Image (cartoon, rainbow, N blue to C red; front, side, top):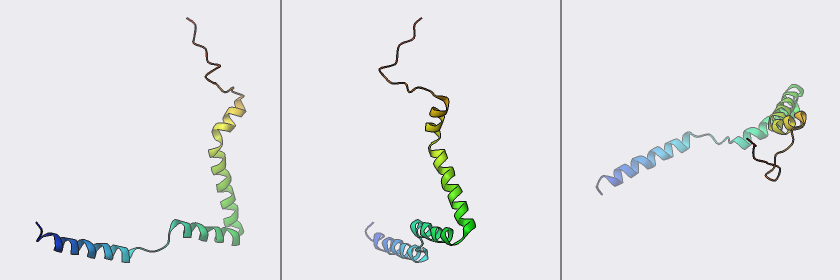
Amino acid sequence: MTAIRPPLQRRIDARTQQRSADLDDDGILTQAHDLGAVAGSDLYAGFVALVLHALLLMVDAMPVLAKHGTRCPVATASSWKPPTA
């Protein structure tokens, strides 16, 4: 088994080096920074970014808005009473 391991390790190393050479270096933070630069320079892209942020904020705040909109009281452990039969 030790005779097989060095050629296998060399093949693995060669494939790893090939894949790392094929990867680009644009990360998600670089793309987000570039998108922010485009949104700042173009009025339409800035408006779309603003609408998208507002939509995501509304989706994130939906449970709170639904609770306040229906005036539903918050159930706590001290206010809970067992049902009577």
